[in-house]
Length: 170
Image (cartoon, rainbow, N blue to C red; front, side, top):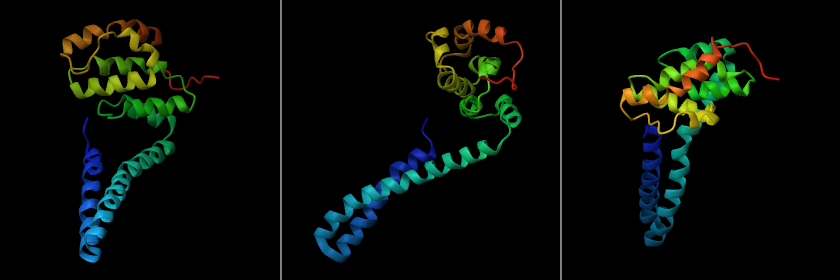
């Protein structure tokens, strides 16, 4: 997935090279340009990563302030864009996230490619041991094929009954 953060990371070094190369050329001639372009590439590359870093920090701060019930509620919301991040945060807090497998299964079997992709990201990051249960699964495959391939997860989700948000691992 190509995001605006990737675009910024690509464009920032180019702008840095153009700006510092031009500044070097105007003030110091060819030597200034030769020093300004590589310096601009490096500086632009660093500046281009700042928006993604800030977004991650904001997300971590936001999730850190949420209660467990709020995290679970947002995870189960059909419009949740980052179920993997929610699951990892709950897991970090010590909650048994296996109870959330029914939610992940519904994402994997969804009609929407975006939801299947989110479900696949959640499965691969929060449940790497279960990837072998869905051999050949691809979120970009037709919805019927995805539904059939993730059927083996049904046995895992049936064992979970209702999602348990309050069970802690010790």
